[in-house]
Amino acid sequence: MSMSVEDPGRPHDPGVLNATRIRWAADIPAEWWRNSHRLARHPAAFTETAGRFSAPGLPRKVLYLGGDPVACFWESGLGRDLNSRLPDDLNITQMALEDRWEYVVRIDPRGLKIFHVADATARRSVGARTSACFSADHAVARRWAEALMKSGADGILYDSTRQSPGVCLALFDTPAALRALGAFRKVGSSYENPVVMAHLTAENVAIVGV
Image (cartoon, rainbow, N blue to C red; front, side):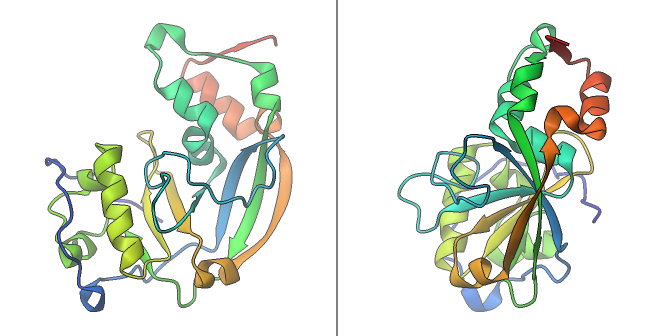
């Protein structure tokens, strides 16, 4: 799925959403990736940890998925930590990569109410003047997530953190989303994934311990 370039603009808080006027995504990929620490209770564990669309006190917990292993890596805790560093501090240990397990899961998108951030018509349907409402400031993004949760959304489709064609899905723990979620199949560790390793090399990330 191609994603449009994020439009410039200043993020703002949501107003009162009209659930009957929201434009939901019509084309939702069925296959997704999950990057999780090997000690995690379960790869499908929904979280309320503070993140782009999750936080304690929100109406729904969130499961973050990636459209490919690279996008999934950058959205994981390990990737976010790496992404926050200065260019001369881009290093990661082999053990840390071995501790990140990758899974593939399929969802049945039929009937799911997924909001597509990159769809300008969808944004207009909720009064969002810019896609920065969902990316630039996580505090603002969480308020939009809360408004969508209260309007019956099952999740949010959005661009990856990195400047890549990757797309991500923040799935809410609604009854419909839980029914749509299939079994998780373990693929291997991030260190064993040649696509992820080649991408890290291209990004000049040093692997310590190799």
